[in-house]
Length: 252
Image (tube, rainbow, N blue to C red; front, side, top):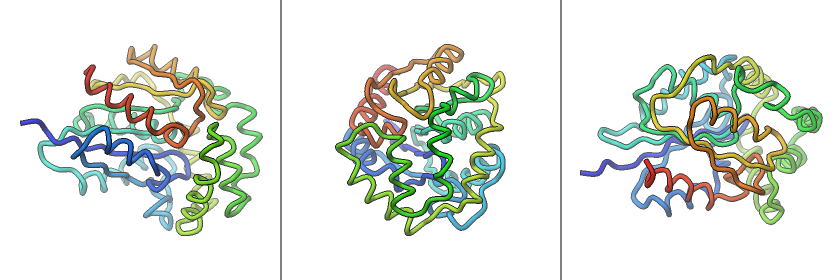
């Protein structure tokens, strides 16, 4: 009997499962009958009122509580993670290698593999300096302007992100705590034992595509690059991401 596919989705810095938006629909379309569970970081989404740990390891320990609630027996589990979510995925695979059967990491970066000026491009750092002190629509508009390249989705996405921020605002304290955890994170000599593939945006203006290229080379895992998408690739082209994940199942 074929095991039921179960996708566990992890977003990045100060984002939550609501930010997956149309990607959920595209993933379900490519995998009919599969289960999809978004797991929020502490300090965001369902847990926006809680305090985010100061280490990626601590974040994993909190998030794994939800994983154990969602987990079903005899499932084919696939982890999909973006940006900071990719660091969480690595730490998760390092400490709990049997939790997932495969993983897809999108536009991520690891200390110890890539230099700091590739992990957050200098122009992106300068652009983001104001973000923690902005609020509401102005804050979300500035983030969106940096992480997406598809102008056709800007207004719809901005409206969604503004609504999320209004209902479940991420505090400045949690923003800084997540940044601190990401900055200190190191991959060290870890190499995953399960099948991993990478997706990256060649035109990412926040994190250099060289980060994904370096991970691909070090781990000897496949990398697919989107030629025009931005850092939030699942917002810019959710259909492409879902199709690439489907191809992984065919190849592997």
